[in-house]
Image 1 (cartoon, one colour):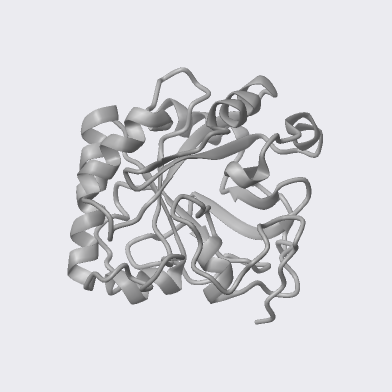
Image 2 (cartoon, rainbow, N blue to C red):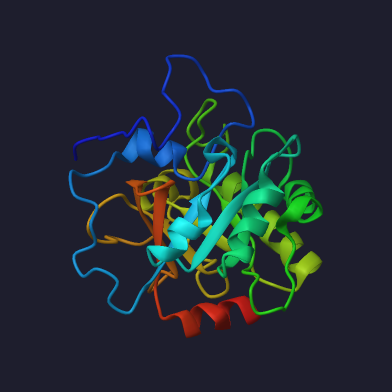
Length: 254
């Protein structure tokens, strides 16, 4: 797989470890799994709904441009660990809503810095909550390659599964919703031992920068969302919801 990186879409890579708080959805996926020469889905938009994900490095987002191109949903990074909140969160989150999109928030997990329940609380307290208003998607746990150090954050597979479970349980306790899980199949295999126990309750957002979704992690028979490129128009990260806008609204309503 050929690695292609757009300097306009993502921060310029350096040889030094990134600053804590600077991680974003897919940062580790791009670095470890790469991106194929073609990331145009083989069957463009057939039965699927276009979306994007953003973080602080995108700054002010041209939401009206994205809406005009067919984007109908968006996720914004709200928090990381228990030490970082996105200074652009309100503008990005509200901007997507103002444009007419269904939107949600995600949390970049750092299992080496604090417990899963503590990070779920931090997420909910800093923008990651849920309201049954028809336009708020459930929160997302972004659990992927560690951009700051050891790939699996220094945890064994069983320890990682426990950490994820603690986060998901607390999020459900706080919001009444099951959080979605964003990950890549390769990372999931390596760092959870391909654990299959979350598939019945937690929607899957799989990352694979290619023309097809490919193999899914154990426990899921289908994906709910797919991040298929980091070099798409306007913001870089583009995604597909696996269904129509009506199904997307159903996910928002719980």
